[in-house]
Image (cartoon, rainbow, N blue to C red; front, top):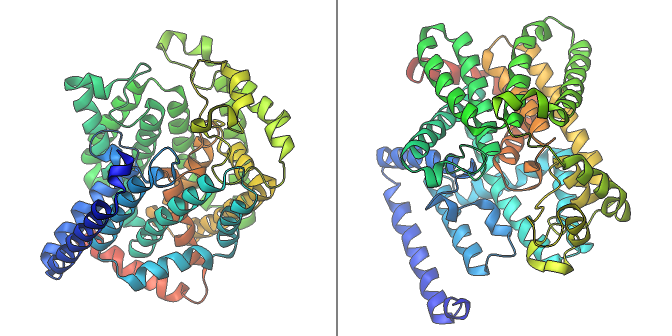
Length: 467
């Protein structure tokens, strides 16, 4: 089949049809009204895809598949063409494409971090897998830059809220009428791969709807209804981890009133301490929830992860501590016994059982990918984002200024138990989007212009698109 698809005439014909298809759509988008309609539809579909949709046809459009060695080059090419189509529908030009790519490196620490990911191909345990994964990550990151440059915090918050609500409604529909798609062994998954991912998405959506209810009392009822739908779905995901994410975000939300009263240094230290306390408490709770959650019939999703972490630290990480195994070169299921992770997998789960696909901790996976040097740079980037976020929260009274604070906390907590920060995922998309937008806010060259644009945009959104 692969030889047939890669046969030169067939491959050439497919490429020609793809190019013609793009040219036709490009001409359609000359009509502003039609272009705006296509753009809105494309954005909705795009957010559903990057949220982790695992049902047809969205399951064929996972951006992570671009760098998946188990997928053929033809599949990767079709994905690149599809996402190029999305970029056209977003009314992006060739110049904007290159500008978005350059924006990834204009923030020095982010540029260094992505640079190390790219250079890891030279010491990778599997150079082909690393090259493909790098291409997928860079291509996916360009879209995060696009949204960061195009929309302000208020518009992004609205997009994320309604995306979570759509996913919640779809999850209810599939659970009730198509249980083979909507319900997994653990709980509701709603066609989004795994209940944990769905639960985390609901936790983020509920937090944003709660924030919207406080900021816009006029639309309190709408916020309450959407909050309730997301809460119901989160409950049926049966994920204790998602419940902890929700608790952390809501507690943080109520602490922000106190945070705004502090000076910058005090607020920064207080927020870091909060993250530390939340992180340690979450790990402890997840290790001791068997008895506490028994009467809720919850599955303690972190069970067995600490032995895995200990084994990784004692063996694989210790062997390549500083530079790691190369981006996406460690967990290679398709390599079987040749995979660098083979010994760890066999020790933890044994032969013939489920494959451990990642470290179940984003920070450990960063070390496995690009070493301790990569982790240090990522931590520096995260702390710089925290500094800029605290400045934003203190300097403005607008509720949407809390969005980057929520996203950074969401990124930190979710990566304690799963590893979405090292793959083209929804969490990576949010993190890059926040990083680029905070960098624009903090840039003295653009700061005055940025604030003015934000104010005008806020007036426009309030008038036509209430939160």
